[in-house]
Length: 223
Image 1: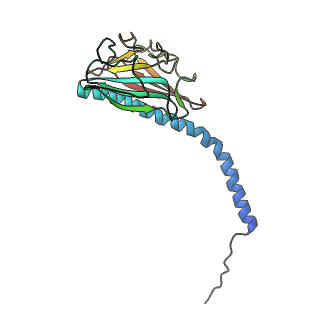
Image 2: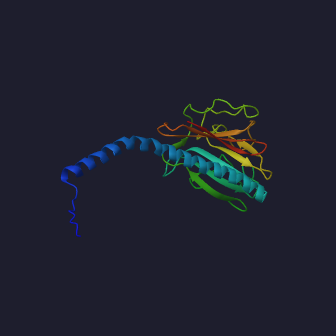
Image 3: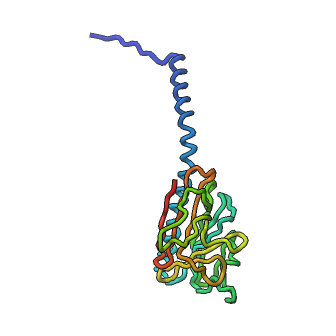
């Protein structure tokens, strides 16, 4: 027994209805996608920065050298604003301005990071477009003891004494952290914080907290 089947495609009207439905769904989805994009960039940048700071501490433990996390919140790169440089101080002369030929935080040039002797620039990180060091008001205003003295109201709690608001974290051979706003004596502080936000600030704030005694890096997510 033979059965005849007639093959039938879409009519013009049916195709137009399908396209209209797709257009409506796309229009509904686009605002959500635009909101998620900055959030994804912020999350990715935070994870990368946390990994970078943690790796600096691990390298200090492994090599016995001081390893510096140099923060330049206002440095403008091809990507966006904000650069971090990891510097291994194999010469043990960083941040001592009187050392002949030595490098220090005040004189360091983030656009052309240089090193000499046993010291070296390990890596650099530029914040992506739309992500910057800063706060949007969604983060905590304070932390419990023993971190209660950390300033959480700015992008970098230990930066700000120099004209471009640079700062640094130094991890020593025991993994301990100290914080600098310029070359010389470290700041007296209970810890350091780095805050990242997205622009426009619709995706919340990410806060990295570094403790001095253990050098632990903690992440706080807000919003």
